[in-house]
Length: 332
Image (cartoon, rainbow, N blue to C red; front, side, top):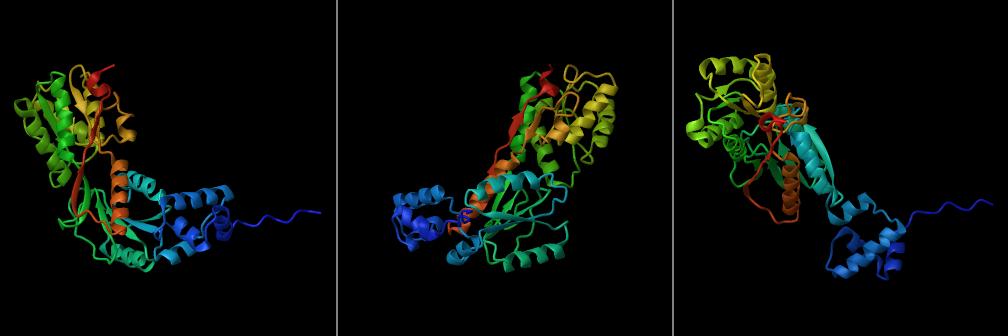
C-alpha cells in the first residue's frame, strides 16, 4: 500500500518543536512583537529543521506590509539601473522582500501610472533611479522613497549619489603618478551634469598639466575617434587623455592605433564607468573609474528598509568610486 503524501509543515508544528505558542512562533518568524532574541532564534531553527515556509499572504496581512518594493527608472537600456537593481535585490532578499521594476521610458504620464499602481499594490517603499545624474523632481506618495544615482531636487529627500568629482580626479592623479605632463580631456555633452562635473574635476586635478580645453561631444566611440583628430591638431604633445566614459575611451584608443600612436607608451588613456562590454574589449583594456553601482543599490535598499522601519536618513549621501588600473595606462 502506498504511503500517504507527506503534508507541508504548519506553524503549529514549528511552535510545538520550539516549545512555544503558535502566536509566539508567528511573531518570531514575522519579526514582530516583543520577544527575546534566543526565542526568535529557537523558532527559526525549528522552522528550518521542518522545512517550514511562511505563507507570504498571511505574513503580509499580519504585519500590514506587502514585503514588496518598487523600482522606477528612466534607464530603458538598463546600463545603470540593472547594476543598481542587482545591488538592491541583494539587500532586500535578506528580508525576503521582492522588487518590482517599472521602466517609465522618460514618459511622465507613464511614471504617474506606475506610481498609482505601486501604491494601490501597497508596496512598502519605492526606489527611484535613472540614466543621468541631473537632479529630478521629487515624487509625492504616502510611502518611503529613496533616490539612487538621479537625486531629488528636494534636499530633505534621501538621495544616494556617485562622487563623480572624486572619480574623475582619481584618474588624473593616477596619470600624474605615471609622469604624464600633458593631460587632455574628452567627454560627453556639456549639457550633461556628469560631463560638467568630470570635466571640472579633471581640469582642477591636472593643474598645470592640463592641455587645452575639455572637448565635449556625444557619449560614443565615434566621438572618441573624431576627438583624437581634433585634439592632436591643437595639442600634438599630449601624452595622456582622460575620457568621460568607456565608450569614448575605446574610440580614442582605436583612432590612436590607426594613427600609429602606442597606448600607453605614447599616450595613456583612461575611461569612466568600468562597463565591461567596453573596458575589457578595448585594445588595450581600459584603466577606468568604477562607479560601484551595485554597492549604491545595496546602500539605497538598506536606507529604504530603515525608512520603512521608521528610521529615515534625510539628505544626500555621496558614495566613493574605485579606480581600476589596466593596460591602457600601465602597459603589458
